[in-house]
Amino acid sequence: MFNVDGNINYWKNTAESNLVTAGILFDNNQLVEGLFFCHLCIEKILKALVVKETKTAPPKSHNLKHLVNLSKIEVTKDEELFMAVLMKYMLEGRYPEYYPKAPQKKIAQEYHMKTNTLLECLKAKL
Image (tube, rainbow, N blue to C red; front, side, top):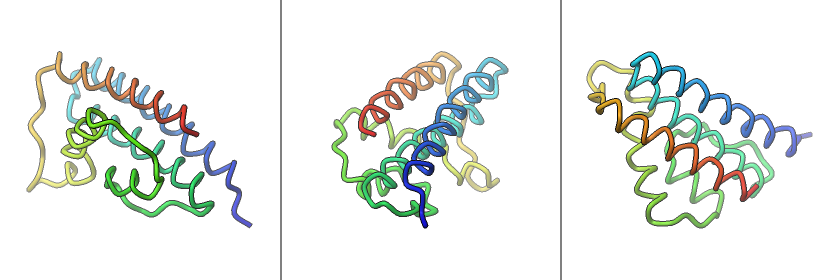
């Protein structure tokens, strides 16, 4: 039997942990890697919301817009635009043919703060 609450807690807790990891990476000037973990953080909290909505395991997708659609939550235009920024740093960033350029550290830190704000907004929907 699928444990809905256990799965929601797993995705929420690992999202929070990934945000902490992103901060450590930014502190060590590993900006692209930190942004990958920001994306991962939002991906995981969205998967918690998908579980809440569907009562089943979330898909093995990294596409934030797809996960928003599956969760049936409303997001603001600003949140949608920020998620599009994070998409540049998703899984594809692991491959040499697509390795995104690191932004300035100040911008990466701003993205980290925005990720934290978005995480809190999405957690409020759980």
